[in-house]
Image (cartoon, rainbow, N blue to C red; front, side):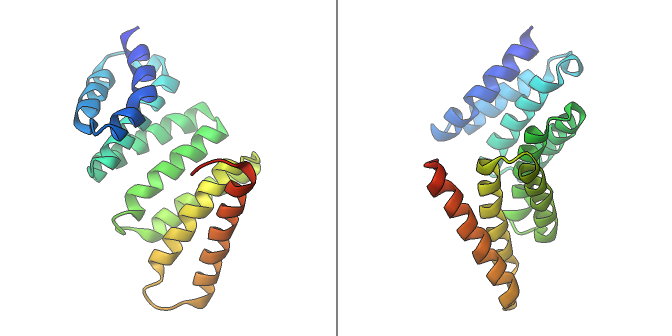
Length: 171
C-alpha cells in the first residue's frame, strides 16, 4: 500500500534529497508517509522510513527530530532482531549526541554497542565506520589531555583507515 511504498521510496531517495539540498521537501514527504496508517503491519519499511526521516532531519540541523526518528527506527530494528540493521540504527543515533557534543559519553556507549554487533557479524564496513566515529568522539572528549584516550582514538582512526583501504570502499 501507500505507507509501504512511501517508506521504500523515502528510504531510497533521502540521500539524493540531501545531496541536492531538498532537505525540507524530502522531510515533508517522509512526514506525510509516516503519518499514513498501518505502519505497525510493516515494521521493516517503517524503520527504513524513520531512518530516512532521521537522516534528513540530521542534515537539516534539526537534531531533536533526528533523535526521535532514529530512536523509533532503533526500536523497530530491535524488534525485527536483524543485527546489521540494529548496529546501523545505533550508529546513526550516536551522531545526535556526538555532533553537538551534548552527550559524548552516551554517544560513545551507543557506538561501542554498535561496534560489538558489527564485530559479531564480521561486518568490516560497519566496523570501519564505527571505528572512525569512535575516534572522533574520543578526540572530542579530550578537553583535558588524556594520552591514553588520545592513543586509543588514534588506534581506532588507523583501524578505520585500514579497513577502507583494504576494501577500496569510499567513506
